[in-house]
Amino acid sequence: MSMVRFIFSGALAAVVTAALVLLMHVLIQTNIKAPGEVKKYKVPDIVMPEREITTEYDTSKPERPDEVDEPPPEMPEMEFDAPETSNEGISINGPKIDKPKVAGPGGFGGDGEMIPITKIAAQYPSRALSRGKEGYCTIEYTVTEIGTTADHVAVDCPESIFVRSSIKAASKFKYKPRVVDGKAIRVPGVQNRFIFEMQK
Image (cartoon, rainbow, N blue to C red; front, side, top):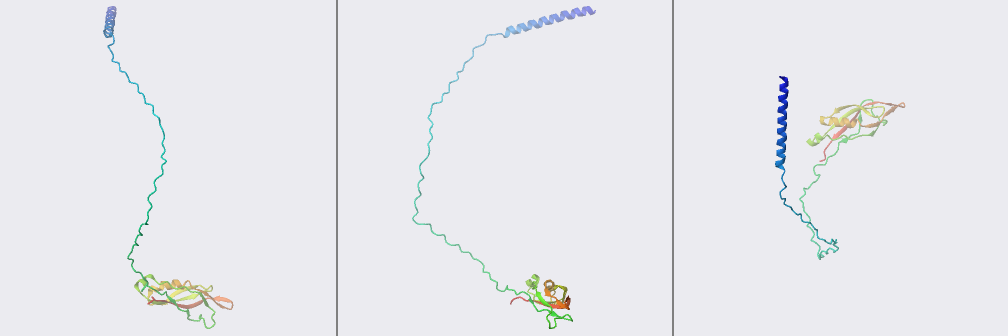
């Protein structure tokens, strides 16, 4: 059985191969034809004309403008309405400083042993200035061995608004200290009145 199949398959393959070869031969013979007529197109030649290139320079001078016989008229000055300002009614006197007074045994007496060197005017408080308040403030303090002040207390100050400014000024006072037996000593109970007045 196997031999019969082999022979049959070989014969079938040979027939198919022969048929394919014949078909290819027929197709090739059918497509071989002489080429048809082809239209020819001629591309014209492009020729650029000869031109002479020259460079020209503008050397002409600009014309002068006509001279003006009369100058243009002057512009009038602009007038502005400016508000008038003056310092009337605003002038202010700074606080006055009275001569220091000393209470108790540490006073000057008549010998003038303790001498003020630097006294600072108190600054007028801005709040009191805006309210138009005037007044005074007496500060009591101690003059130390090196001439500075300490232990500041407001002893007579009807308007409390002036206390802080007065104490600040008194704390910057400088003195030549009192000397006893060649030694500087503290002097308590020294008073200074600061007067705050606005100029009328």
